[in-house]
Length: 260
Image (cartoon, rainbow, N blue to C red; front, side):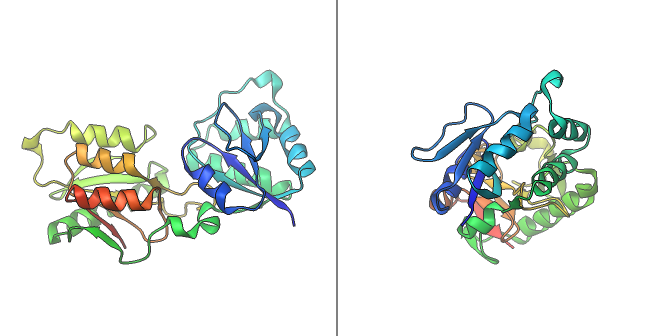
């Protein structure tokens, strides 16, 4: 049986996937910690051809992408033909770049495995509700935030939005979820008609094999700091890290988290 390689970024997700795989190969491009006992391959963006050969030498037939990764800084002088192909995609939006990453690995014969395929327990089932019951206003705000994300999806903007009392308080962009929630936190009370709801969801047409939206304890704490009333995520499409801890924190804070 061929092995699966984890292309590992930061955060807990790569380790969680490693726990569910049989003898995985752990690939890093920086100083990301490597769990004990795993075969480790250190890669360079400029030398993707070398990485492909090394993975094949370890009998790798599939890859999965996990953890946060920033756009790489590369040395053009050192780039092989595979890296040059990727460099051309850096001018595209995030979705275009990620599609090119997938195509590079697929062209080398690697099967792409999504994180939720390996760990289906990391997503929530339809109708799951933690914490208080959302009000009609909460649900209306969630629907408006989702409508904003749907409208911006073709523009490849972001995966999150906040709406309060019918007003859009924040839209996630390149800076990420934490930056958006900090911006919402700074909104004066006189401009807020309600506590508000944070919606986190994949962009329309997003390839869930490589870029699954993720929330965890830090997300819940940021929602609390921003003074929001709850969160809504699509069932089966957002990874929830530390499921038990998130549920407990949501209930403790008087929030709600709804999967729909």
